[in-house]
Image: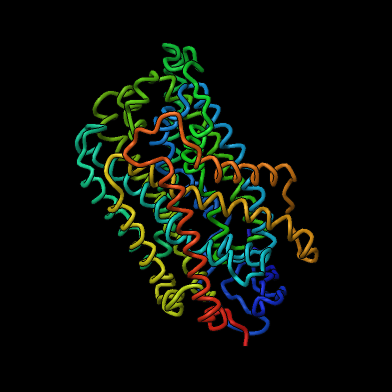
Length: 509
């Protein structure tokens, strides 16, 4: 089937010294690789290499990472019961679908790479570039590298599991060393072998999906044969404290995160107005179904105590119980390690595109270098910086609670800007009525996303019933909030004093 070359108009927000804002049109071919700005006539260098299926593979590949293989035991420990754990996973799916629908409207209305950077810039033009600047720095320095570090560390956990046959009692620094190697490998692939990296992502995505299908199949098979083990008195011990559910939801949303991946790299997606909604929502629905069924399978095969004691290797313990030592302790953990490696590849792809776009907007120093394209058709310098920040997060957290801390510190700014982006969507329905909206989000989806964002940003500061961990409960949200406030100071230096956007790649002459 031959693709049609469809002209598409992108609306870019132009801020004039913080005094006014306007929407400028950029016309490009929806299937080609050339983007021509009507005022500057500058060609874009990144090619449109992603179609519907490769785009959906990136979405599925970004969502399915360490979360589903590692967080069920942490979520169970937080909420206190098997039944409530399942409720939280279903609730996470519903909220994620609502947020995905809102981002479908944003992405098709403003189809440019950068995600929230573009949406916040359009909705909140004053103070000039403040919110998009703070988003970019928070995403680049907190949200993206912390999540990539968590996935890289879990990849190390499962590779160590495959090598030693033990789900726990590994050398934590050996796991971290493997995590560093994973981050470097993904950076080299995306930096020097762009098309091969996309193909590898697609292959690893298939591995992930097949692993989840295998978990579901085994769970139902065992359930039919011997009945369920973990569902007896399913809601006994359920926590009633709101902070327990924030902790659980941060981990569930971490597992579901990734449905906005194409919003950050939409300049590389062919026919984005058609393919973005299909790839994003289709990938999320497939993954959410597999996640809920996989959690049910865990509790069918394992009892509640076994899941709690499995720590971040619950999938490995599951397969050991189902298939015995060889498959459960050697083969399947290796496959899970490869699956989480694929998640790091997808995440590194998206994170580098946000940094690349932030540099080209003039939000970062050395923007010409950070926003450059290598001869390999990749943002090589942006990839190197993303990798460096990820490695810092891998090696610096204290031992013991590092994985949970990385999830919590990264989740706070994510939900703050999710909420602001959807508030901006509602504002733009009034302030930019002339913008073409190929897709319109439901009111209930917008309301659920905003309400969830408020809940996730406020309740982390409520003291939990027990706070006996090595890291205080307030450490992660306070550190994230402190960096957001620091970003406001950096915004004043880079945007107001140095006038970075006026000397950026996108500056109009």
